[in-house]
Length: 407
Image 1: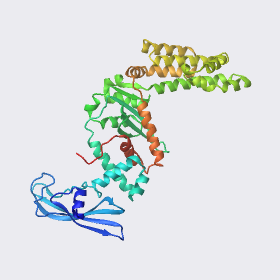
Image 2: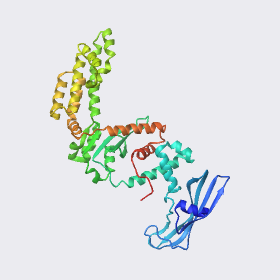
Image 3: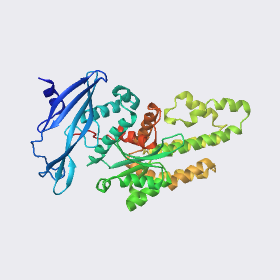
Image 4: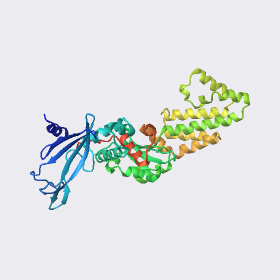
């Protein structure tokens, strides 16, 4: 096989395109491959595929995958076609996208490496600038988003994440499979609505749950977008309820600690984390420690008991969920302890969403996992040049997009 035929096969060329020369330039460590168009072949209009005539040609170059240690450059005089209906247009070459200076095989290689490495590592391996890598990734994202003909939106999750030291936030909408569906700037009502509007309405018509934290902005956005359906969709994650209750126990513990003599305070302080743990997971010794301090920490004991009662309600050990939470709130109010009263008010104000989350069995854990991965992405990259590039990498890494050139 001669070298011209070899590059015909490498580039997937067929009539009217063919390789006409291959030149090795030692000084620049490059291989220049010249591809020509057979002008005896009648050209077709790129728009309507009707017969046209050759108007002129423009010389263009593309970078291809390296040949051994040499950078490979494809060169061609690309014809422009005159169509009676659509005017003058440039022919589409078979080895590269119309807007790119790289072959499809080269861009595919960049995308594959970028999925497994940092942009800095890809830049070193391929001798390519960060800006050019970014443009290749953005073109891949655009292809992937255009091919999202169907996405599972039955169970959606929304969460915000900080993307800079200046506390800039973005809103991330994902599904139960852990796929990032949409990203919008900020963490406001408009941010979530922008995410939802970017998804075809026929997919959102199948939504059965929308897990979120207790952000007023997100709650309002869901009601404005879904209307009367929102009350049946919004579910508040167990983590946020449990965290609020646990924090209230810790606040009560600190109040009790201030009333103790110095010596007893030191002894009780050593076991401060036992009050925050799951009671069913405490061993005999730890449980005995709590019992021994209950007389000194009477209010903390009450708060801890209510925390464990809430855990039983969430696990479904109570037959009437809504009534159980209302009874729990009455008990919390009756204690007269401000931290518990505040949590009781929070539970009552968000009771419908709590019950929806319990019945659906879905939590915001997927969104929290994506949030963690986003933080790790930024940490591994040692930061991103700007917010738009950061958002593009989130789509690229966690959007599960089909960035290939296949149709």
